[in-house]
Structures are given as C-alpha cells and as structure tokens.
Image (cartoon, rainbow, N blue to C red; front, side):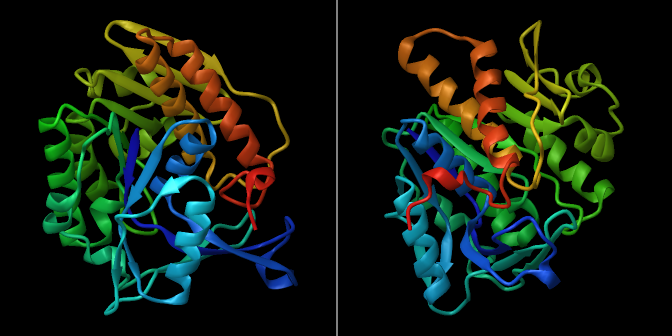
Length: 298
C-alpha cells in the first residue's frame, strides 16, 4: 500500500482551457501533490491512503468526498475546527493563485506524525511543499520520514519546489538533505538547476549519489532514472499540452504504481516504471484539472 501525506486544498479551475477572468464555468475539486499521487496509484489498482489535516468546513467535506471517490483511504485525516481548508485557483497558462495562509494543514506537527500507522504500508510518499508551509509542518515531515525508515517503509520524496512559497537559495539548502535521506527521489532537471545549479541529470546524480533511485524529469524531453551505477532514459510521449500543473504528480503516481507492481512480483523494471509515469502524466497534460477527467466521479 502507498501512504501519501501533505496538504490538499480546494482547487478552483475553469472547465475550459481559458483565462480565469474570462471563464463562466468552473470546477471545485481537490488538489494537492501528495493526494494527487495517491489517487493515481489507486486508479492503477493499488491500495492508497492519504493523511493530513483539513478544516471542519464544507470545502474539507468536498475534498474528502472527492478523494474517497477516487479510491483513496481518507479515514485517518484529522478535521480541524479552528483552522480552514486551504484554497487555490488556476489561471490556465498563467499560473496558480494560493489562499492557504493559516490553513489546517499548516498546523500539522510531529504529534500528528507519531499518530500515523505504518501497518501494511510499503511506500510513504511526501513532498518538499510540506517543508515550507509552516515550521510545525516541517517537523511533521522530518518525523514522519524518520518513523517510516525505522518501520522499513520505502520513502519516496518529490522535491516539488514552489517558487511562490520560498526562494531557490533557501529551498535548495533545506530540500537537499531531505532528498539525500530518501530512498526514491523525483526532481525536475530545471528545478534541480534552479535549486542546486546542476545543469544535467548526471550532475543531479553527482549531487545525490546515495539515493537508491533518483528520477530526473526533463519536461517534454523525457526522464532518467539512476539506480546504483545504472542510468535508464525514457522519452516523453508527444501530446498537445493544455495545462502542465499536476503532471508531475501524475508521473509520480504512474511510476510508483509500477514500483508497487514490481515489489509484489519480486522483480524490478525501471523501463516499465518510466513508461507508466509518462503515460499517466500525458493524461493530465491534456486537461485543465490535476486529475484524469474520465475517471472523475461526480
């Protein structure tokens, strides 16, 4: 089973691929890096759970309903009556606007991490977003990763730098040691260059030589996985892109679902993992949502 942990917010986006100010029809959905990954893993046939804090409000109710409809176990999510559910709004092709200050998830803490159960969990998936939303959330991330390692659970970490939340110099210094202590790391090549000055996948590998499995994504070009002394490259699929936000989560979800297949079958196929990541990302790139519309349940 995969367990994902981190903030999910209510996501508002135009239904068509048009600017926010001109749109008439919108969707209100659940959007968060870690729960997105859990949803993709569940859609591909594996048990997946998500843990975080949500406000005890209608947006929190809507998020739980949406995630449960995707097959995600949300039974352990904490409802916080004192703090609201966060919100973000997409302006297709022109970025994202966040309204998350003081959100329930920003009050995640080490005590929340201690309450998480790892029975039956094979992979923990987290991201660098949690490290910046608040000091207590950063403590939650550190403690949860430590407990997972102690429990023998594989720790998957998506660097997921958000420039609107913190500058590259500060983020790079914080995110590098987190990545270095993870079993599996996802990072964009351009993201790594922004954070650490590494211009090529090989330079990223040189920076993080001890990570068991390092996946460097290079946009429309493709992605490379470094495992031990091996490097495997798989080109991206050629598609017409509508909106890029959420594609990285879809890639990670496809990749991790294939990894869980490999773990259950007792073998390893990096090529298959990369192909599964690209295939899942392609579906999300073709929509304004973070999710695959055909699988959405109303």
